[in-house]
Image 1: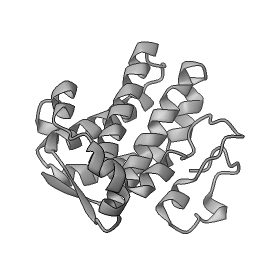
Image 2: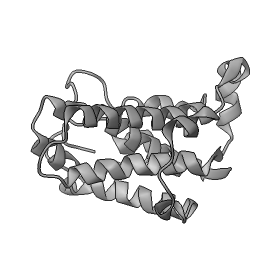
Image 3: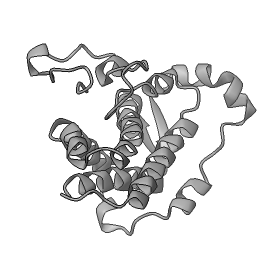
Length: 194
């Protein structure tokens, strides 16, 4: 098992949640708007996450892609004890265990998004739906490994591409407990802010 530090894990989870909610929107919207939402800042942030994941499992890029069914077959379900006491069990934890295969699947899913962002044509609907399901599975894996971690609940409110304006959302910096970004370097609208 490979230990992933809580701050990095939370940032990774936020980007997985954001992607899961964003990927289904281009099905009905312009692909170029979706690409503009992610490039350059969010795509660069994902590249940074991938570099860190490569440090955790250096042989990942030379290994065959993980089999989804096999990867998540051994992820432990929360169970009644963790359902009732998960918030207390996770409160003081500074890292959480993951298998190399789980990390490789998460990385491959993020890489697939970056690959699609470089394409001029929108991928087929089935392809985007599959990618969204992969993001759901990757985020769900973290949910189960870190069941009860309060910050994960907050991450479900992360802003995303073409979000519903009236629905409550949080910016990445709010979820991570960071200071707000410099206003001068921020996008002009709240919908575009990340």
